[in-house]
Image (tube, rainbow over all chains, first blue to last red; front, top):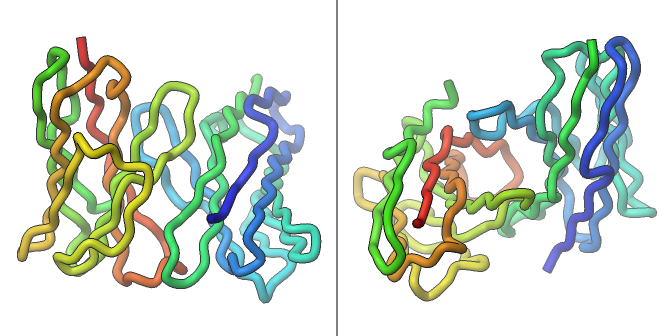
Length: 111
Length: 114
């Protein structure tokens, strides 16, 4: 099955700086890569996703890049704000398959 | 609010006991997924149901079972509980069975086994 690895496990940045979280996957059949944000006491919520026919996608301060050849994808958050502090999960899946999640990155934005 | 409702939010019980966690998916969503999140662990997939039928099974222990009812709500049954079963259990739903769309997560049920 698919194996998704996520790094780093913890990340601290100063407010206004950028944060980058990286994930690798093993199954070349995976074609959908969502990112979820989990705030304290809440369930994970989708913040951005990318499909394998696209190399990059941006939504305001958040962007995701995908390198299919290297089987890795990354989440980029620019101009970080304290409300960006949360645990972020990457995932990979293919049609008819389950979602495979990374182990999470705890992001702390220091005011 | 994701539209997915999980009950109870918190549950404390003793080893050897049995508990049932309940999930109501978003209106119209046919797929229900159960995940376990232990301390410092990611989201471990347990099981998926689609329109009442089991669709996929992950790392679900034999002591655990689940079902999806005709009204599409789902229950996760955990029996012969062990200390290691203490975790946050999430339910998620999606409109389809093909896993290429968004999962909508509930707020979880926190199980503590003493």
